[in-house]
Image (cartoon, rainbow, N blue to C red; front, side, top):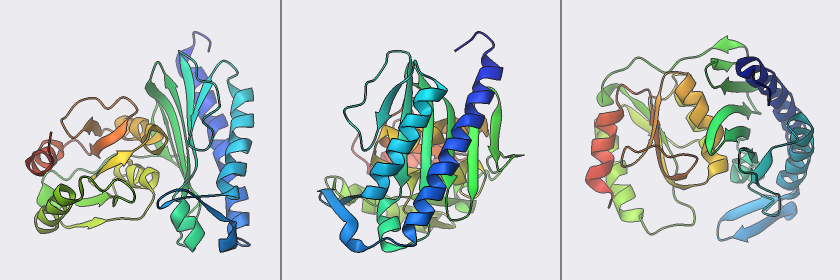
Length: 270
């Protein structure tokens, strides 16, 4: 990457958008002819299909040309090399279970991390043709228009996104206690089934916050830069910088962050 950082990141972001939307077009075309016999089970409740795998190959090939010195952290390809400075973090199809069942909420998520910090990211929600993107110092955008987190200041005014555990059930009881508490102290909770999309919705002000545990870097990395560039806050359940980890992940419009963390910390073992 050259010294003119802002211009380079902006150009990279343009390239990532093109790649994400090309992969999205392939995914959408495949959804029209997808058969349940094409699904595979990686582990309990962890589904994958040839569509995930082929989309990831397309993305990896294209990103390799966009920034050859970068390595890869990708959901479907553990054999790809990682580099010390730059790594692409890829979820070719976030919301695979939705895709397989024909539920229209799934996305392509691509981030560029520098020394483990996201510096550019794109989330392309395929069904609504919504392309969210951001790069460090450049702001956050949706289909070319600037976006910001919401202005709501109280948890009781907030609409939250979350996800349900689907394989790691060790924290089910505290999760359900927290869920019950937030049901009674917010305007509601939503579970669309794509963490990347949920986080993008925080960035554009549709949700005031999103929280979940048991996520992976490819679920959250692009969303982290989006929320930060849109004026929001991203931490762990303890309030620390998550890096690119989604293990105990919470993001918000910043205004309700401390109030939400108090709820989370009250219910979850720390």
